Amino acid sequence: MRELCRRCLRPTALCLCASLPAVRARTRVVILQHPREARLAICTAWLTRLALEGCELHRGVRFEDHPRVREVVAGPGTALLFPGEGSVPAAARAADPPRVLVAVDGTWHQARKMVEASPSLAALPRISVVPDGPGGYAGLRREPEPEYLSTLEAVALALGALEQDPARFEPMREAFRKMVAQQLECARGARRNPRHRGGAAGA
Image (cartoon, rainbow, N blue to C red; front, side, top):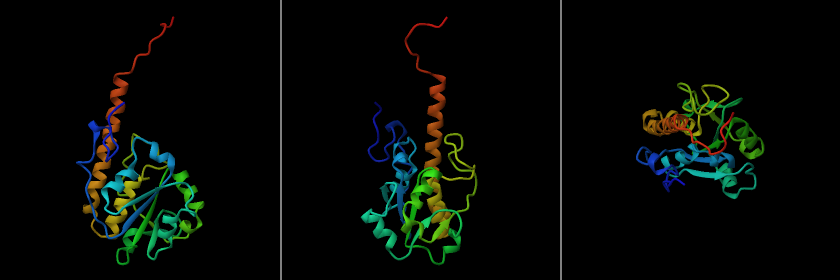
């Protein structure tokens, strides 16, 4: 079993801690993560939590009975980072940014189900981001559309737009791109050096 970094939870040879910034944002971020996402090799919610001071991460599918999430959702100035009808581009909220931004971490199907299962979450004012290019998962994870973003990318873009300072949050995205490159290189290495299984040779 490979040794893992206790902070970023990556294999020590692929540790990202030196690449992760420590950023303080005016808007506090709270991430709600689907439990299945926590099992993936690339977990951008965890990296987002490490990169942003004061960021919280809670796991679950339904949050109506989650005491801390209920407190966050009920607080003044809380918004949901989620696209769709009624959402406002983050840049349009720069003059009046939310105090707390809730981000949902999961596949698009999982994220929609999580929001639908928590009426108080679904009722929050919504903020969306405009991708500035294809999502960073390209070549690693299938997304419904090329411009769909990871949680880390969406949060970094939203905060950059809200604070009108995209460059301050760009190191988060750079760390994510480095992690994707590492995973792709590992996958290529595995294909170049397949493990041979013992057993009878075929005819």
